[in-house]
Image (cartoon, rainbow, N blue to C red):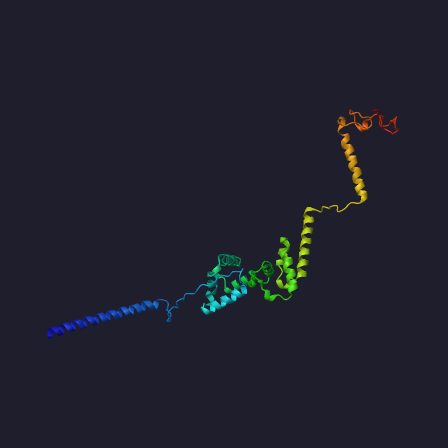
Amino acid sequence: MSEMGEIVELFRKQMEVQQQQIEEQRKQIEKLLSFLDPVSATPPAVASSVPSFPAFDPTSELWKEYWARFKTFAGANSIPAEKLAQVFLTNQTTTTFKLLSTLAVQQSPPKDINELSMENIAEFMENQYDPRRFVVRERGSSFGPTCSAATCDFASIKDPQDEALRTRFICSISNEAVLKALFKIKDDDLSFNRAVQIAVETEDAAHVAKETVYGTKTKMVFKTDEERLTNVSKSKRDQRSRGSKTGSTQKCWRCGNTNHRVVECRFKNAKCNFCGTLAILQRHA
């Protein structure tokens, strides 16, 4: 029994030594951790998987409607405000992403696209895809059985007659300069009469600019009887002059010879013995 007691006592002492070593190691670890940054007591939030959202398509939806749907999507998925811009960019097409990249570069100072705020993006998209600016083009291109009511905004039409005249007039214009001038005007400020006025002013300005650069070339619209007679006499004189320059290749109508011109004929002052006419000789069969 004494031997068993000694063995038990030996194990007890070993356990005490191990316990002391473990306690010392724990204190050393706590001391090392005290030199590091304090760790938040709350566990880090794990980002949940955000579902994808359809990209904006200006041919099938107005921006204001898309923006309303996106805000609803962000609220339903509890997307934080600081991540809203990144989630929006992730779900857009390559074309939209490039447009926003250009917007970021044009900032002063230039920014990276990920540094754009959601307010900057929303303002740019609203100006870029203004539904009121090109609505005339959409309505004009939608004549037929399948009209896209989303992009035509038919509900905002107040004067159907003026709208029909304006749409048909603008869609019939083939002058690029006139169309550019018309599309710069917002839809609310562009009536049919205003569109006609802008078209006339633009064409007049282009005509004056062309005359200023290349000079004015006056074209004869009509001729009086006196002018026509003058031109006929001039034409006959030109024909006689051309005939006299041919030399001996043509007969002299005074004497019939071909060795001289009419103006050089020596019988130009003689009278015909047959008819008495000046400068015409008598000819016998």
